[in-house]
Image (cartoon, rainbow, N blue to C red):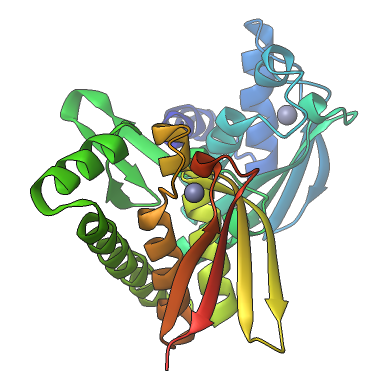
Length: 299
Ligand SMILES: [Zn+2]
Ligand SMILES: [Zn+2]
């Protein structure tokens, strides 16, 4: 969608040739009123315009009309268009965020656009704050067989891979070692993931671990219910309402979340630079309400 916005540069150059040198915000409103004349959405109005910030709003977009029961900002296509148009006509990077949305019950879809340094960090932090969904940053080239998430190549895989992989490990090495291997492998993965965030310029341990939790959660691995810290036993407890394994295995009468336990341990080790042990003390696959993990320091 950003590239669609960038296509507006042709129109901008054409208007320039006609002697109409519009300001970025004027051009933005023009593009959307042309779109509205073709039957899309509603016209935009200008709320604020400066060199580094432009705010525009509209009572509704075609996205908010279609997704009006979602109770969250849904106008990602517009965000991308607005960003693309502003970036194209100013030659600078813009970051557009929908602050209020018709689909959330607000009176307007309001888009706040800030001129920013092009930055992975900026987008990632918006995901952690819960202001952006990772889907806004997925670039999908289906015919080329490529997907990237914030400029990083990723792959999509079916959830049943967890049952398939674990069954195959169990057959080759037995149940207990299989759990250990999964734990270890996912711990390394969690750590490596945090290393990757560090290379993007994020250094605060709390932000690093929050970021990893937010990303994995939004990718469908688990939903974080609560986190607690017990000072006397120096134990962190993490409660997840579902994990990829418990959903994939169903009720088995046993704990199944070795990968998730390893992942949590790896994220915490990588973020805080300590050695920890994660244990699953309750599991949905065992019939418990949630999967609960305790994290303790490893001497
Ligand atoms: Zn909206
Ligand atoms: Zn579990």
